[in-house]
Image (cartoon, rainbow, N blue to C red; front, side, top):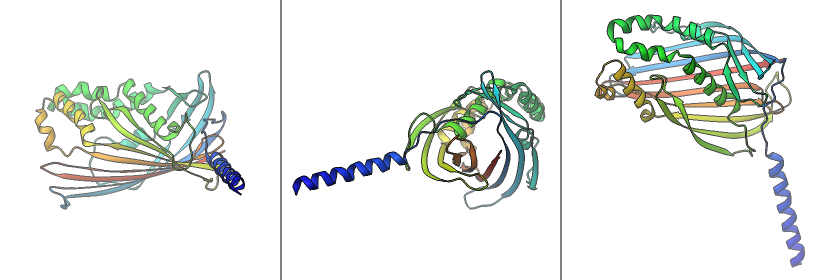
Length: 314
């Protein structure tokens, strides 16, 4: 009887191990050359602020919808991922005045070169994107010449080819390849710290905690077919990480660094829930939620945005 129990326990253990192994996955990047997708992104944003927590002196929201085409082409270095110059519709327009229209850059064509296994190589049309970014920045440069000439170099560096390429590489890794290089079982997560350039002071790096989690295997949402995998990626941008960029920006503008603590330095959490085709790791749906805010002795700010991107492959 004792031997029978031992054998039974062993069999149960082997069955449990087999089931766990069957649930584990090893993502492989295999976007087919020649494939294409219609890409639609809807973005909803909300911003509010006041002189103190609870006060509402500012309240604004907007909704935009972008449509574009993504193509995967064979390239001597691997693959070229081309996102066409899309169209952006302002479903609900923001009432805030701004001299920079970010939708112009969002609608621009982007060409990324990656290896066959998904490693980022370069942004092949960085010259064209830089030209557009420079034209968008021109009004800010003109004001800087009048108010803070020392800030001109900092602003110009923000649209350098190096800075634009780093931004494209970071976005590619965050959304499409952060789960490569290991096997996963449902519920597995990996925590890392990413070093990324500050958006305020190019050349200044920020340390951002990042967690990648494999949620589950599931049927692909229509109209896609077959099995899919869902991953969640979460990145946190803290006030401490952002502060160095604000201090450097203040120095460039000739402002006392002590004034930085009177500014509501933002901090935010970005959560991306992405569903991929299991066979190729092509994205089917990507939902990104950004929640943030900042406070100081003078004012507080709250902001949030949700974007949902669907990929219809053919």
